Image (cartoon, rainbow, N blue to C red; front, side, top):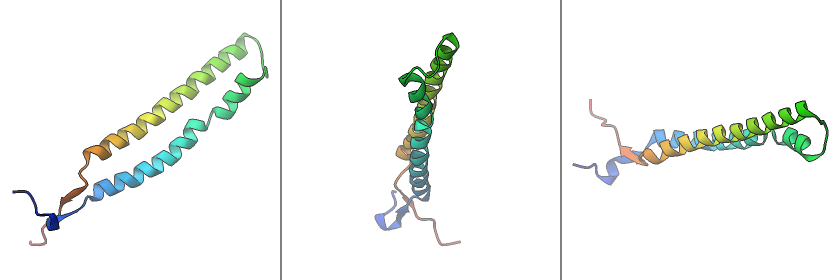
Length: 96
């Protein structure tokens, strides 16, 4: 038998996941943009030239992309966990 609506309460795990997701999204925005200034400097004007400079720029571009992918993966994992967590749960019994 399913619990009656009055026997249901907000799921504290879901509430914590919502708070965590909000914090992670805030940090993710900063992480995703962390390498943007360096990337812009090295891909905009010729501040450094030659084969070593090209290798550095390629590595910087790759690390920037990888950082963004991994950051988004963290956000997606939390979003998936949130979707899998019920909004309401049965209230714990007060009787011992």
